[in-house]
Image 1: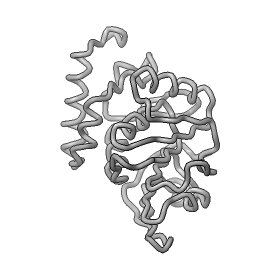
Image 2: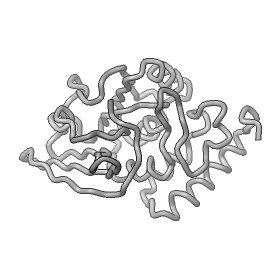
Image 3: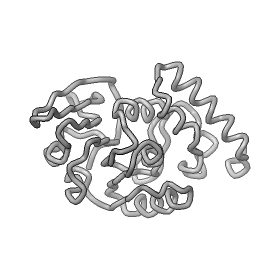
Image 4: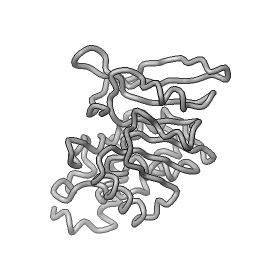
Amino acid sequence: MNPDSMTSEKSKEQRLLMVESQLVRRGISDNKVLKAIKTIPRHKFVKLPYRFQAYYDGPLPIGHGQTISQPYITAFMTELLEVSSDHTVLEIGTGCGYQTAILSILCKKVISLEIHKSLVISAQSRLKKYGYLNTEVHCSDGKLGWKKGAPYIKIIVSACAQKIPKYLIEQLDNSGTMVIPIAKGKSSQVLTIIKKNSKGSIKIYESLPVRFVPLV
């Protein structure tokens, strides 16, 4: 298929098939998450040479050694985050803005940080063009968080950290949740859920093995 010729109807058909075959069948059950993913034209967040693969079951390159995550992993992390419409979410690793768009449908506001300036510019343009207007994308080192909007009830990190970044823990609200890939040994990573209670103590839970680009 010529990626430029993908019609609205064709992309919708592929999107619905992706949701049913890749997400629902693997246990994604949050209807709000599924509904959000059904509405977002993922192919418009993918670089042109890979656009015909936009709804395939895998990650794709977006430049600067970065990727748009496998659809299942994006949905799984979003479901773990348990976002509500009154939340402000801090996202680390904007990339192409696809995860940002999903979050923007589910929450009040997304503050997203990306270290690569060209990705920031393209994500800002894309999010504005397609109407995801409750988003802010900043060129910044994600490990430092974004103090101006802290504390955050939800933080999601789309890159693998060697250890839990202390500034992100500090900026996580009491009773907040952070979802982040953490390195485990030299060659493996695990998706990690961090919950902070009302007294500021944290509990750490490990979930799926994953493969993300490094948090730099």
